Image 1 (tube, rainbow, N blue to C red):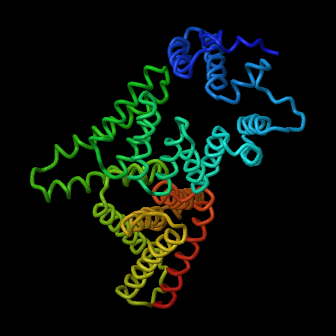
Image 2: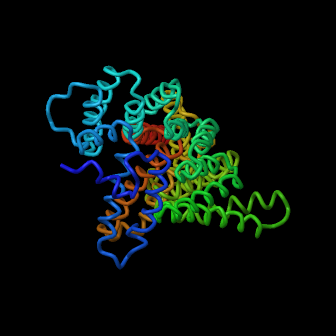
Image 3: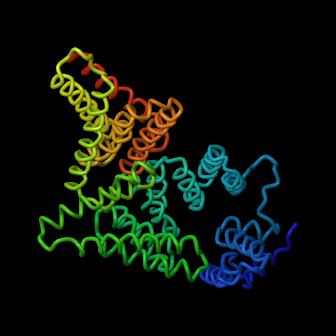
Length: 437
């Protein structure tokens, strides 16, 4: 069993230290012992983990109270009796990634002690991991009823609001979190992400810059590099705008075409990463145009490749065959937009026709490219099979990424909707093709 002053000694604070003193001590020592800042010290990682363990315990009122009385926060495995027992076991379940069991324990802790604010916050954290954003909002609203809200309440409130599509409300929540914790880089970073979503570039750049400063000061190099990457992305976007022709209409046209030119190969190479990145740099009108342009490329490739492959019978005149293929592709595209819109409305996710069109156009691109190159690749069956596998993979990943990262569907909903939507839309295209030929 650990002695009662171990964690305090690790952080070099007294047992009577305040929360502010504990946080300041941890951040000071974290910079000194962070493994990324001490590559030649083999013991730096162990020291940092020990500091983090102490910090996690001493900044939690319930865990700190148990530690002060017993010298440990480990639950002894006996049948829990009190709200604190269930709370501590819930934390252990969370650390072990047994999230459903953790929820049960936190529910029981709240039932036994309805004013245990820490249990509401922990339950909100677990619910966010499980993508129960409605539950996160309910827990945060309950926490706001207490006389003194915990510092992370507004942070999780902002995360849930943002994932539900309420971007401006999320920004307000992150701002309140920053007001309570002015040196919390996570809140600055997430507020910057939300600012990018509504194209407030200056505000986003300031938030990422502030986040990078605090991340670096606290020794969190991963967060620091993530913030710097976001800043560089904004800088590239602005340099591109400035290098465009001065006429306003030309600036808008070249900006869109330039992003599509760079994003086209990105979508074919890394759809999961490039799709949300490309969409975040477009306004609604540009997203609508981009989706139509991507769909035009996809449908043109499908029509040309399908004609060469003689998907339509050879005795049908050329103009009718090309028209049938084009109409089949258009039917698939339009039905894909419609299915995305219906699913978005049913799941009560914010979005627009522009986002639906953009996702639909990007989704059809791998299929069109596959059909276009098939007349050449089919000479080598193994090559065609490889391209087929890649096209199917990229199609599923693109639609899944669009549903999850742009439309903010949960991972479970996106996983089940992706094959269902594709099946319906491809079936519509097949039926239209059969009808005209």
